[in-house]
Structure formats: C-alpha cells, structure tokens
Length: 389
Image (tube, rainbow, N blue to C red):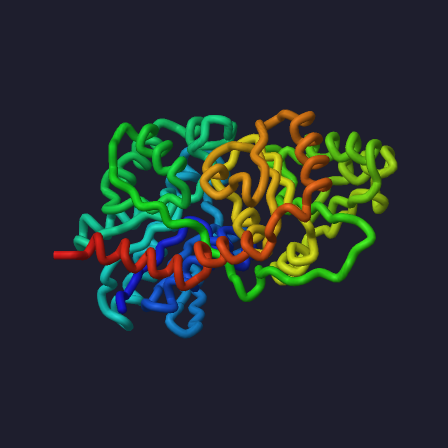
C-alpha cells in the first residue's frame, strides 16, 4: 500500500460541488488499494475575514484536505494573480506539512490536471525528491477551445511546459490527449493511458419497463462546446418526420433554449428538461434511456459516454478528441462535428435499429474496463513503474 499525495487542480468543494467530480472518483478508486491524501486549494469568495481555512474529511483510506483562501487585496490585474497564486502556494505548503506531521512523507505525488496544482508538485520534487505522475483531462489543449491553453499568457505556458517536462509519467485519459500534449510541449514523453472511472454500482444495465416512446438522452453543461443548439435543430427536423421518440436533456437550460423549444412545439412533447439533478438521478435516467446523443464541437472523452456504455446504451457522438477510442460500430455511431444532417440521419438510423445493439454486451464490456477496481489497478501499476528501483 502506497501513501499517495493526490494534488488536485479541480475537486468538488463548498465553492463548486461538481468541479472535478471525476477526479474525486479517481481518488475513491485508488483508495481501494492505497492511502490517499487529497489536497485541493481554492479561492473562496465567501471568506470575509481574510483568513484561510482547511477542512479535513476521512472516508476509509481517503483523507481529503480542502483549503480555502480569500480573494486578493488587489482587485484585478497582474498583481491580483500574483498574490492569489502566492496565497494558494502557501496554503498548499501548510496542508502538506499537516499531512507530513501526522502520516509521514508520501511515497508518490499524483497530480490531477497540470495547472495550477502542478506548480506545487514540481516544487515538492525539487525540494523532497518526490516523484509525480500526472492525470490529465482538460479539453483546453485542443485548439478549438477558444478559452484554452492557446489563449493563456506566455508565462503560464512556460510554467506548464516545465511542470509537464518534470512529470515522471503522464497518465492522460485518452491516447489522443497524450499525443496532443507531447506535440504541444515539444517532447516525446512515454505516457500511459488510464481512463476515467465509472461507479458501476450506479451505472449498470437494467431491463427496462416498456415505454410508449423510445428515449434519447443528452447530458451536459449545455455550453458552447457541447453544441446543444445543433442537437435541438436536428431534433426539430426528426420530430417532423416521426413522433415515436423523445429527447431527455439533463442539464441547466437557458431561458432562450426553453423559449425556443416552446415556440417550435417541442417543449414537453418531444424535448423534456430535467434541470440540475443529483448524480444518482443521472444514473437512473441513463438506465431508463435507449441511447445517448452527444454532438460536441471539441472534446477529450466525456465521462457521461463511459457511464452510458456501462448502462448498455449505444452512443451517437462527434468524432472528436478521444471519443473514437471507445465508440465503434458495436456500441454506437461516430459523426462529423457540426454536421446536423449527419446527426439527423444517425438518430433516424439508430431509432430504427435499436434492437440490433446488444445492450448486455455493451454494458459488460464497458463495466470491465471502467470500474473502480480495474482503473485503480492500472494506477497501481503506474506507481510501481515510477517507483521501481
């Protein structure tokens, strides 16, 4: 059993309960076999007294430290960023000292998302010779992301390259992302693909009660890169051709989306919105659906695709990022991003051929790959690879 210092750039907290929830699932999986010390530091706008706080939570082998620091006294600009990063780094050091004093020195550092926790991971390596691996999920490395890495300041890029170069083993969730990062940073680092993990106690195949309509489902933040408008335009055309289906949209729709759905006669007839719901409710809706529809403009590999597969659902998705690494003719249909006609044709084809997809086989295959134990064993192998004499 290793003592793993789990540094997270994103993680669920009182500031955002859903931020990096997939990273939390990795931590839970790893804690099946190792002692995991999660360190997550975040700026908290609710702090009014200027003081930092640390919340500690213990669940078996998973010990989480969430550190909160106030907004900088500098309201905006370069000085604010410098001061904020200073407060963050100082709080990382404080939490590390707490862990070191109570539990001793960790065996390895597991960095989750390069920046900005990577700055502390690199510092630990320089000061204590603690080796670190890097799990990466960020879609910001894709040039299509207009708020991603390519738009960051030169200093951010320079520091990111140093953190990546000093990493002992990158663990991207897809091969495509690993290749993208190597190309971006101009190196040829060996990497090991370890996917996101699925809670198969929630996401599993379940025989359905007969429904009046076939149910497509879309789950996302409904933001720009998920291309919800492209889905809605295609659904409108599909509904003009057939009325034997419905689309369940899980997410928080804008008033514009709601009004458009009403104006076009789709609201509650063909398109149903759940709003924000719990993770458990998401699993229930997936088990009761017939297929998942994703139409992203760019992507790495959404967790919801893995969760849908574990429920036995065939998936229609854009052929972007690492999606092709899990979707094939046996479990779904890949289409070109932005091609609404192709999306329309694929939904029509899938609705006519649902019975040809072996949902039991889809669920079984996915569950074997993405369950907690399997993924945790892959992380164990990664740690052993780095720490071997």
